[in-house]
Image (cartoon, rainbow, N blue to C red):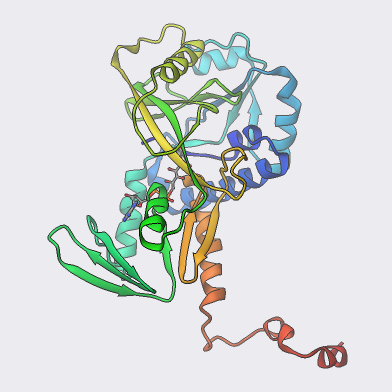
Length: 337
Ligand SMILES: Cc1cc2nc3c(=O)[nH]c(=O)nc-3n(C[C@H](O)[C@H](O)[C@H](O)COP(=O)(O)OP(=O)(O)OC[C@H]3O[C@@H](n4cnc5c(N)ncnc54)[C@H](O)[C@@H]3O)c2cc1C
């Protein structure tokens, strides 16, 4: 799967609302730094920086000002230099070329490290099991051989991505405002040493993993009622045309089209796809989390930990004066003041 450890470059520019764009970009930068520190061995080609391209000249100054505000790292690159970095690419009709800090991540290495450390910390994993029943704050879980276990907790956190909507529908009778968005990827023989991606809508964006390149199409996501992985041929062909705009002599013989589905949680169903984190407790004790992007997962985890701490206090830890402040009556507050 594509794993682009973002560094705010794309989201600062692509999210329409400036404030939301800068917020998501900052959260991506936070996650980028945390993940690189946690698992530097999972970063692929750490010394090869990708090129971000902007076609729309009218958008250049706004993008640069958003990058500056969000602290996105970028270095303007001349066309001649870009052609040296990626000789097979065409930079004609491109208004801005920047070397940026996004990198590819090998998520299998990251997950192995997380898995091993979680086990060491005492976490148990029940792979291949499914939730059979939810009764209050207890889960009855059945494994592949039919054995059942019951787990009870004061807070149950669902980080089940695309499966969250069905879980809440089936076990809580709740239709959560989770939407499904279908988009497409092309997996092809590696196209270049450095990644290259447009920031403009309806243009291609690619990062590389080992011998392959994974290419997506900006703002290709199509709202759908159910998650389905059937490729929509027109959409895949659009993406292929986008790849040829960057690599005119792309040999597409060793390539496949893939459809994928992303989810978001929204309160306004008419809004654009949300790329922000979501933490919601639609039923007391049952907390749903969505990171928006994998890169935002460290930020989400910090906010979630703080949320759980607030909800499940530990009385052995002394209160701070500010924790007691709202408990005092107004007369006492006036006296203190
Ligand atoms: C094609 C694609 C490309 C992407 N590329 C990038 C990228 O390059 N960079 C980036 O930052 N983000 C990317 N994202 C977004 C990123 O993958 C998601 O934001 C992130 O994985 C969400 O994490 P999650 O833990 O909430 O869900 P997931 O990663 O989807 O994990 C959910 C897990 O829950 C399990 N599950 C589901 N239902 C149940 C159930 N009923 N019982 C038990 N387990 C269940 C699933 O099997 C899965 O293992 C991409 C997403 C897609 C689809």
